[in-house]
Length: 545
Image (cartoon, rainbow, N blue to C red; front, side):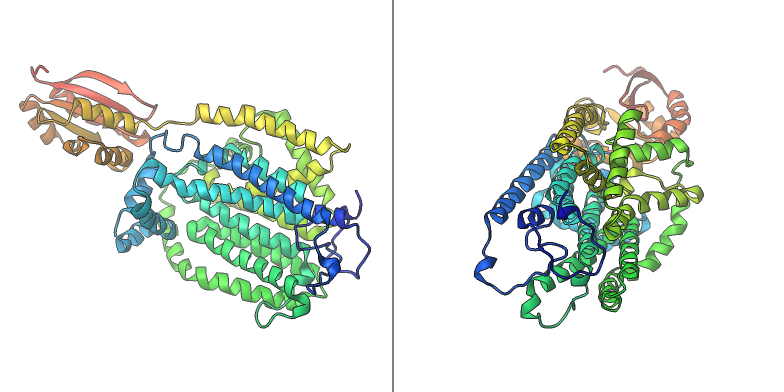
């Protein structure tokens, strides 16, 4: 490929003749070629050329396409599934008064900002499943658009488009773009930080321009771009860290990227260090106050059982983060080969390559190491790692031989992901039973002749309580904890007795609860909704319905 594929070795060289069309194809509008300083002084020759106007039109089309694909997949059936346990936690916590909300979030090992945002969002949008999940869908689409920007900055329009389109089709990102939790917002923060870091990696000389003070008229465009990139890093890191404690891994990856660029750019080192201190000082000011609270949460975290770390867990993690959730080894090897081809293509651009590798691999590898001591390996905490990987995939696609090879290979990946992996995800994803359970209880129980019990704790039944509170007639049902005195009283009154079992722990302990009920009533029927949840109906005494 011509000069557009040339290396970017750090300090910007003297101006060189560059084909404007080739340069515009590689770099975002307004940035120019990496080795050609941009002057903001208006001259007749600065008027947009046909190639530049065509490039802008292609940008708009690319953004519309990836935004449309991402939006359709994240709003499809958005309210079709019932809330599951963690989403019910989101609702219950967000419904609390702000002081109680903050205390509850801290006590349950979370950061409060996401729930504060949902608290005020519910006042505007309501409390339906769609309303609770809509912010995640918005952040999911935003993440795809930020991936376009990051890929565009890293290696050109095709790379941005291909990376964003592939990310839009990753089942793990679709899933968390439809869940009323903070993971989609965390990933958007990581995408913003990644885009800012990639701009610094491509333009270290401009990144060294002063972040504050008057803007020199001769370098106005470059200064504004540099300040925007630094601001993106600050805002992205803070958004990720405020959404979840493990957003701190985004700060770490971003900081390591900055340190590498600093070490690699000797001529600009002092100015880059100055700007880096200012930027990460702002990140520290917005986040370090939380560290004492986070340290206090660590002791409670050790009480949680996430299961032992196994090789199968690691393999499944990588499949879900990087390989569109496929277990097909041939497909995995093909995608891995493309990623390695992308790394090879960027070998003369170490700033860009290291930045992408850090954002793609640092968080998962760090969590694998941590999980050896305290298992925490959950894909939902690490989905931001997909962003760097799909950009490397897209760079690898651009290296495919033949003129149309990159587009054909991209089309094959998109068709496979869109026609196989995405439908498989929607067909196989779990559908929590709680809306159905609530509907049945409201229809069959809830009057004075019925007693409803749960075993052994209401925590796992929060989704059911959500639906009982939001369905007509649900207020009549008052579930109680299993207690032999209550069971005996209900049996003496000849009432139907309902027992709800909600999760694995309930299943393990439900035998004792069933034995208590069995002393006073006879099982009439039982319905299992999942391997972890069931609803049982007992007949007390000789009562006939």
